[in-house]
Image 1 (cartoon, rainbow, N blue to C red):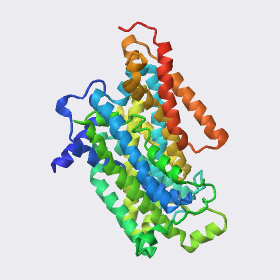
Image 2: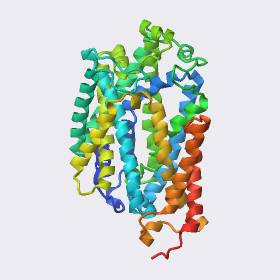
Image 3: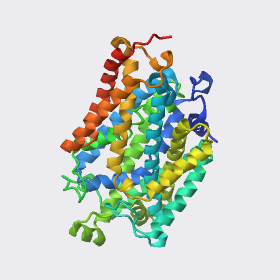
Image 4: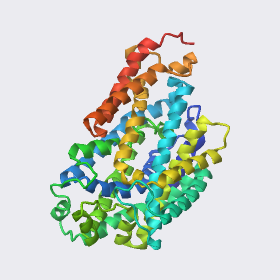
Length: 472
């Protein structure tokens, strides 16, 4: 095994279950190569097979998609580098332990519950992705873009079987999950590239102008979808992983980095998975849209299915089926494992095995409902919007706490269990901006950054008033 693979597996194994309540020691720090490999594997995954086609359903133009994704993903990389990696290498704590010091144990418990449930829903979407590939040999009816409930008994049986297998493997522990993902990620990346190349041939693309004209000036959004502009693409791609970077979830990863510059390695995963893979998956859907079946559906006012299994199978055959199954599987597995860890913080007497099984059961039930995958753009935006402002608490305390005259790690130093300044800042920010989204039909990703900034500022203000207890 190469030094590269050894470092990559070491950091993933450590992040799964060591030093939860202490700083990572100097002897266990990892080089930048470990982070490059890990992010490349994590972000070329099952979600990409769905997100790429969904961009086409929003009627994006070529400029909106190609340039918008470049800028949005750059902003995500900068967020990881200058916020998450900076704070992660300064304190070397997990997100949960860092939050506990600020918020108190009871408030962190509520966060763990929300985080675990949202992880389960995301894992459920990935079980749905894999099921679309498994169902091909059984001639299964694929879920439509507008489907919310199971459409056949075959679908139910396949999802339940997949969910059971994925949950059992996840329950075996993070080492098993991480090693499997490491070995499979190159296959998945190769499949995305192959799908993109084959789709370009099928679309008769012979020049860059031919490639550009696939999207051209854009089109009307498909039935049930909203029209995306340049800024929709930029902000959505920036905040697709908002919970991980500005939400600080990846503190748990970057606490193992020797230097904050390891944050730049996220670009490897982002531009492979969230640029090349999204565009390649969009090309697969562009091929399908030219088929008589898709044209008939569009003529009837119905949006053609974005089921990844058939799209990949039509491009690269059996290899496409295998790639979709692996992509969904390698994403669902660690997601279920992380959800289990979040639940275990709430019910610590239950073993890791059983909390992971519980998380897998919730994810499997979610996977029965195609809406989580078919509406993935909206769900991911909501996921980031809910969790990202919590990260602002950590960021604003670190960068502006001293100037604001507040005490850092207030809960730890005073023994409080529930920091009302934190909860009030998050609840008010979430409530106000979510109301704006609903009342005025504002795209949620437009409001993620304002909600994040608002939460951080309110936390500083509320803390000035709330921090009256003597510090030990």
